[in-house]
Length: 250
Image (cartoon, rainbow, N blue to C red; front, side):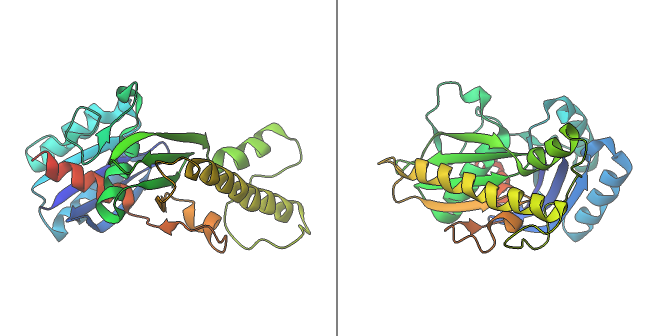
């Protein structure tokens, strides 16, 4: 079943067609629906590829959900499925306050189980760095939330007089020979250290000791490349999960 998947994040929105867990016609729009002209142009390009049988919305910005639903209804004739803990999921939610789990984290959990089975740990390298844990009984049991890479680099530039804003890309030397080079090492290698420590901590549980590791998000490639960490990098994992949830609720 072909689904129009909409993943609304804090920094950008990703749209794609998803069928049987595979994403195609993937487009990212910075600023999301605030740039309505670009969004409509992007959706028109996607809908030229194929006509979906429905749509599903994963959003961590609730204030814009109504606008997205109205737009999708105008284009497709029906509102999208809005993902939260009350819809049918491919994992059981074992969590004290399930209404506080972000839709993207639920989508990541369902996508990870669909592709890699359970137990599995998902790391999402976005504005925040999140880890989600699904145990051997296919239950979402919680996770970890840490500052994202942009918060680290932006904070240094905002709170110091002489340190510049750097982009998380490019090579890291052994020793920084410039201010930017030194900051880039701190960002990449320091961030890896945090990821490694959190991963080791999560794998100490008997429920997740043999868990598969998968990672997604905009900064995952730059942080993990050459790190030796045993994560499978899956850029379209959230979109896959949105599609899985859509199909379960049809």
